[in-house]
Image (tube, rainbow, N blue to C red; front, side, top):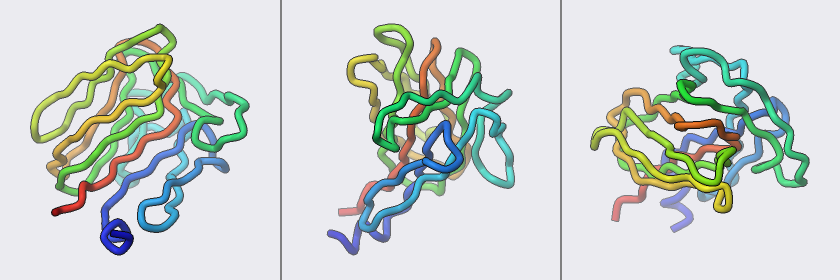
Length: 156
C-alpha cells in the first residue's frame, strides 16, 4: 500500500503563508505549495486566484500548520489549478463566514459540482475526474481557504 501511495499524483496547496504551508503524508511526507492572496493565476505556475487576487491573507493563530493560515475568498473569486488527467479525491480545509455556504467546483470531466460547506465541519470532500484542464473552486459567499489537496485515487 505504501509503495502504491508513493506513486499517486498529488496536488497540495497551503494558503496564506509563504513559509508555513504544511504538508501531507501520501506514502511519504509531501510539502504543500504555499499560496498567498496576491498569487493571481499564472499559466506557467499552473495555479492561482482568478480573475484577481484573493481578498487577504489571514492568520488564525492555532499551532497547526494546516489551519494556522488562510486566504480569504469572496463570491466571484476562484482558485484555479491544473491537474493531470485522472480520477481524484478533492479535499479542502475551508471555513465559510456564514453557518453554511455552497462550494462550486468546475472543470471536471463529469461536469460542474456543488457541495455544502459548513462552519462546524470546516472541510469538504468530493471525487472528480480531471481532463488535464484547469479545475476551479469558488464559494457563493465569503470563506477562509486554509488548504487544498487533490490526490489521485489508487487503481484497484
